[in-house]
Amino acid sequence: MLKDPRYTLPCLVYIAVIATAWVPSLRRRWRIVAVAALAAVAIFNGASQLGGVGGVHSIDLPNAVNSPIGEYRFTWVNELGFFGGPPSDAGRPIVAMLDRLTQRGVTDTIFDASTFSYDGYHLTGLTLLAIRTKQGMPGFTPAYVTSPKTAWVVRANVAAVGRPPCLMSPLGDARMGLYVFRGRVPQDIARTRPDCP
Image (tube, rainbow, N blue to C red):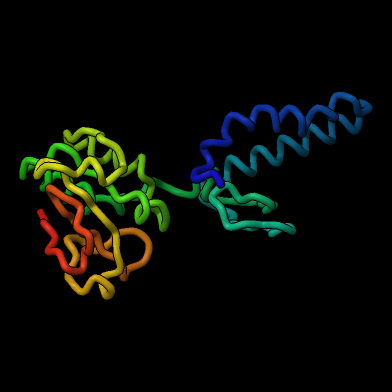
């Protein structure tokens, strides 16, 4: 499954050509009607996406799945446009946490791949946030956590851990928290005190 509709943008050129290739083969009167209809659709789409009017209307076809690109879903109006709205700043608390880690001497932050691969998180995006705070990019494996200058961040259920997290998860399930450990990856995070910045 694709994580973002931008991955399909290059296909739009081909889809547009295939979807309208039949228009020149029509007789003149029907060709004018088809061009007028396509122009009306284009004008409505532009007004809908630029002006935020029309709502979101779609039909789930057989085999429809819940995905950002709407596989097997016929959408005829979507006022949010192709990207689903403006950028989110829900990650600001994570950026602030990374800034504090950098101020404490952390040069690399590793996000636990098994807990940051769903619920709105994206490992590459998190790594870019770490780079933005002047940190390096060692990878996603806990094997790189060997010194106090490397932080390991894991996302876990707060009730299951039994300790307050360094930061409540700003994305996804509100019961989840972010725990930071430095120098080594603990065998059991419930028995290890996190090193919160």
